[in-house]
Image 1 (cartoon, rainbow, N blue to C red):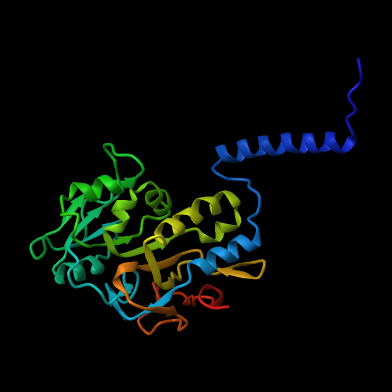
Image 2: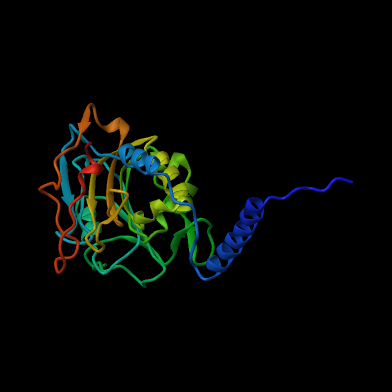
Length: 282
C-alpha cells in the first residue's frame, strides 16, 4: 500500500483553511463577517453601471431642504400613489406628494404613526417593517403594494429609506411590481462594504434588477458618513439614488454636473459630502 505524500505547503494551506473557516463561524456569531476582498475591477464596473443620465424631463425637489428631501425627475403628473417605507420624524416628502394629489402609503414597525396631521391629509399607514416574508411584524414589498388594490395600469412612486433592508427587499420583490413604479428613490446604505465580496454579491444584483427597467438620473451623498477611500476609489457609505422608468424619456446623455443646484446637505451641522467624480465621469 503506497504512502500518500503531503507537502509542508499543503499542510499549511489545510490548516489555514480550517482556521479561516472557524474564524468565520466565530465572527458570524458575533455579528461580523470575514470575506475575500472584492476585485477592484468589479467595483469600478459597478460604479460605471450606475452612473446617472440627464434626460429631457428635467429635475425638481420634493420634501424638505435637508434630510428627507429628494431630487426627482420632473414627471410627477398622473402618478397615482407614493409608497414610502421607513417613517421618520420628517414627513415633508410625503406631504408634498399628498399636495400633488397622490395617495400615500407608509410602513414602519418602529413608530406608531407618521408625523402628518391626519385632520388635513388622508394617508395609509401600517405598523410593519418591509421584509422578505409577511407575518405579524413584517410584510413583503409585493404584498404591501398589492394590498393597496390600486389598478395595475396606474403609475406609482417609491421612496425607500429602510436602513440597509433595501437590498433584500428589492431582490425579493416581483419584477412586475418594480415596473409599476414610474419613479424610484432609494437611499442605499453601507456601500463602503462593497469591498467585502459577500456584500458586493448582494448589492450588484439589486442594481442589475433595477436597471432592467429604470435609469439612474441623480445621485446624492448623505453627509451622515464620510467618504471611504480604498484602492484609490472613493465610496460614500450612504447614497440617495433617483431612477426613472425607461419608457418615460426620449433621450439621455451622461449627467456630469454635480452637485446639482437642487441638492442640499442632509445634516446642516456637519460638513457636506460631494459626490466623487468617479461616480459620474471618467
